[in-house]
Length: 181
Image (cartoon, rainbow, N blue to C red):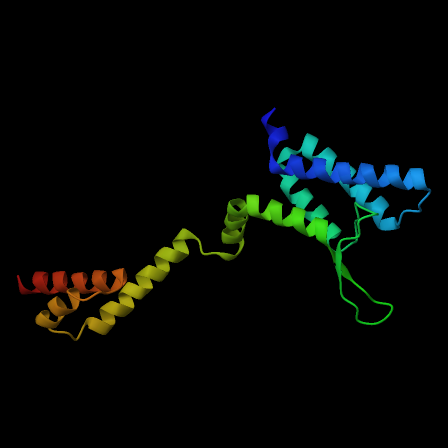
């Protein structure tokens, strides 16, 4: 029962309600719907089936549906044309559907942690890369501080330094103590 209370289910239900109202009003008033309305209904059916059988793919499929709806490839509402239209020529006028934008923002806001994890996996550094970077930084500081005297190392340790710089100074200090013994 818990899977039906997710934000994805609420968004899918909202789109279904918008589509039902659109199709009932079009039927009652003999309006001719556009191809994007039928594509929107087809996409919504596919997303609903995916959310029922493959719940782990619901977010991705709904995201794709809303992106296609955002650029008016798929349309869910015929009578309320809430869109931001950009006119380049009299023929070309791409637009952004406002209701798809609002639903997409709601989805992205509620899934921001999951999106952050996906971003980190694709574009972020792995823990090994982070460790390697810290080691390189420490070695660079160690090389930079190698010419300092013991008193200068003690003075540097009293300053506000990066953790890698402090590690490098402590290693230099220990090496010198071991070398003197």
